[in-house]
Amino acid sequence: MEKKYLERLIGKYCKVVTKEPGEERASVVTGILEDVDYKDGFILIDSSQGLGCLRISTVIAIKPGKKRRVEKRKIKVEEEAMVGIGTLIVFIAMVLIAAVAASVLITTSETLQSRARTVGTATIREVSAGVSIESITGYTNVNKTKIEYIALTVRPRAGSKDIDLGLCTLSVLYDDLTILTLNESLVQTVNTDNKSVFETPITSGSSYTILDNTSSIKFGVISIHDPDSSVTTTCGMNSGDRIIIIVNLSAIITGQGGLPPRESVEGTLTPEIGIMAQYDTTAPAVFSKRIVNLS
Image 1 (cartoon, rainbow, N blue to C red):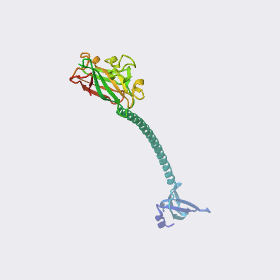
Image 2: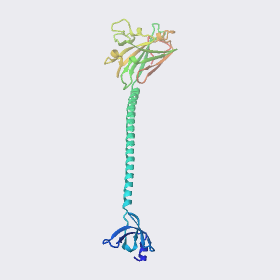
Image 3: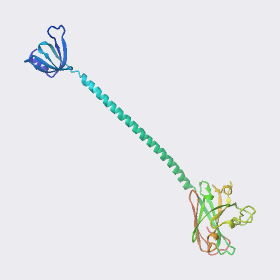
Image 4: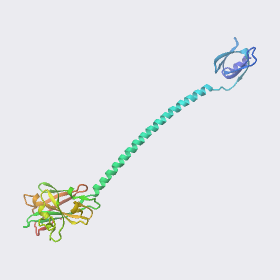
């Protein structure tokens, strides 16, 4: 082949047709024509089988063509497979992390929701429940010189749950702070046959009154409105009930034997759950009657 034609094909992918002397069939070699040695009569070709030499005299024809990148295509497929496995591993890891995070968030939200519901219920009960003191009445001694007993008219607040009177505490502040609780044996329905609620007997027909059996640490209860008898049977006060709490000031204020004129006494009635009721009253200067309105 002429030199001018071979020079044009150097560096190109070619199909080389060769035929050795004595062979009947021609052979085809494909590859990149790297160089031509005119002195020794060889061409250097880089084929799929490696770098080799072909004698120029055996070359019948050379046809340039497009290179088939079979090997590189295989490498590319392998690389894509490796990338795919890595992506799959990362994806699975992300799914697992998302699942764990979702589980933690769901568990946390359920816990918070449960706590919020509990706190909300307790708060509503705490705010809505409670007692209210409607009026305060005093009961003096025979000589009308001091108040020996006070009667607190109490009712549940609107919308309040049941109030357990046995768990209520009553504080009385004069010179000292005194805490009283309910004497459950001193709970009775008001006896309308008597002229005064202060004369309500401890039991029906008894000569002993609730007034006489109160002490410096125990108060008594007279039910004045209790349709379902919850006060007298279970010491529980519910919606619509009204009671009178009898407090023995003569046993609490021992130095004076009761509350003197112009003196003040205060305190609170605190239920187990809910808003407490406060009272603050001052005795008048003169007691014209034994029953004195202190509201």
